[in-house]
Amino acid sequence: MRSPALMDNLESEATGPRALPHFHIPVLLHEAVEALAVQSGGRYVDCTLGSGGHALAILEASAPGGQLLGIDADPRAIAESRGRLSGYRKDALLVNDNFVNVKDICTRNNFVPVNGILFDLGLSSRQLDAEDRGFSFQHDSPLDMRFGPDQELTAADIVNSYSESELADLIYKFGEDPNSRRIAREIAAGRPMKTTLELATAVLRATGRRRDKTHPATRTFQALRIAVNQELRNLPLALQQAIDLLGFHGRLVVISYHSLEDRIVKNILKQESAGCICPPAAITCVCGHAARIRLVNRKATKPSQEEVLANPRSRSARLRAAERT
Image (cartoon, helix red, strand yellow):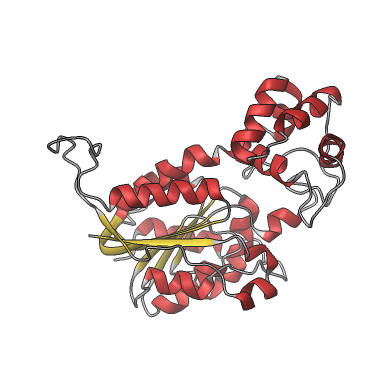
């Protein structure tokens, strides 16, 4: 039965902003829908709605009667998806919130249990290309990097207020950059910094000329974005909530884009698919842990060569899936 909150929300969103003319290309679209085992009349959650590409495919595959709850911390993504999903406005509830609150969001909207939950982590192309968000050094824009405008901490706050050693640790931990100390030293010497171009220039000075297709500032920008949005803190919390929300045979699908994310996903799915998780040296089991899921794919699914050629930003994507037991 469709919840009253769902109907009320859809009616109010029908008059929302119109969709933008060009949409972000969903990564591993066919593979994600297949891994979710989408069925007619099913109930699904897209925890990273973006511009609605995956959500639209899920709604199409779950028709007739399918329902979708889409979550995104970025209000622009919500506005864009309203237009893209307008043909399913009675079947889609869009919520502007962080996916770390997924269990509360679903419970509040009487959207439990669910048949499938999708996480498409990282940035959308639209966010990366936006000239006022600070996610990319391709544009000279303010050092912001917040997924949602209500967040207090910005990249500029970190760049200009963290100590040199704190910056170095952050860039090494979240960017996995071996040049973190040199980069932090150069950033500290050039403060205050207000724009992406100033930051990228400082990183380039610290590391020298770029020697391959990857700009030297890429890892520093990644590290700052992760810190601003607390991505590696929120992800494991959200994944545990997602498993709780799944009904019997419900599927969890996660697409990640760098090793830090993928490692978290892999470890949680491995732990929750195991029975005993006591240390190997333990003589008898004392943990009382029981498997809650089974792994759908033992190895991560990667984009095809054709998809990478069509959408180069998909090249680092890894898809992992599990089913509630």
